[in-house]
Length: 294
Image 1 (tube, rainbow, N blue to C red):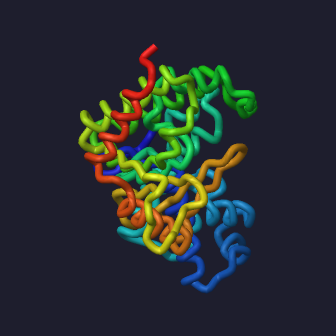
Image 2 (image 1 turned 135 degrees about the vertical axis):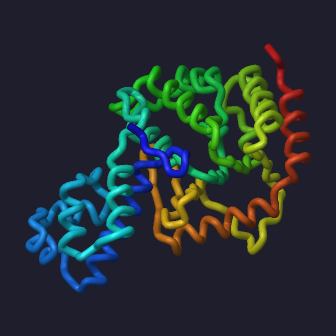
């Protein structure tokens, strides 16, 4: 069952990252090697490494042995045991057919306080209509991942959007490059309905903010992003800021503070260069009106 933090859904993957960092810091502060810790605690050396690198869901028995060996007690022990439980939780995205790649982003979105996204080429998944998704899947020559299926992809998108609109859901800020609106990713009539849906969501949902970055915008420092990206921040300040990047065949998840900080700086520049929310809505409406309704 998915855990909550202060009434908000928790991302098991992010809690796993948090636990890994805490365990690694505790071991290094104690001045012992991973091999020595394994020997003293009775936890396999490979498992110590996997836990410290967030490669596996943690087991309570292994973590508690490590904490006991490292002399962790009191409130810190209680907190880390709770984080272990949260890190081992299972989410709806683990059902078959959704695909590992989409499941990874659904996991990151779970429990986020704020999601900031820059999309360079395509309508973001969190805003896509079922018609838009189905049309693209029906026309794409790219194969689905071996662990995904069409119905699962649709189910995954719907589930992710439901998480976005849940009570206590995250604030969602998205910057659409003007290219997203000008380059046809589906037939015109489907694209029109997709854009109209984005306008509706931005009007109806206070937590959704949509801005458009004009192709002739001058970005501060000329820090032009080389790819689309998403930035996730969480209500527990001890959890890492996470940056996700999607590519054609693979994804990249960054948690190093220096790296994620660079993306936050770039995003801030994009916000200042983008049209205001009001002018962005006007451009979206103009593009929709220019497309046929059938």
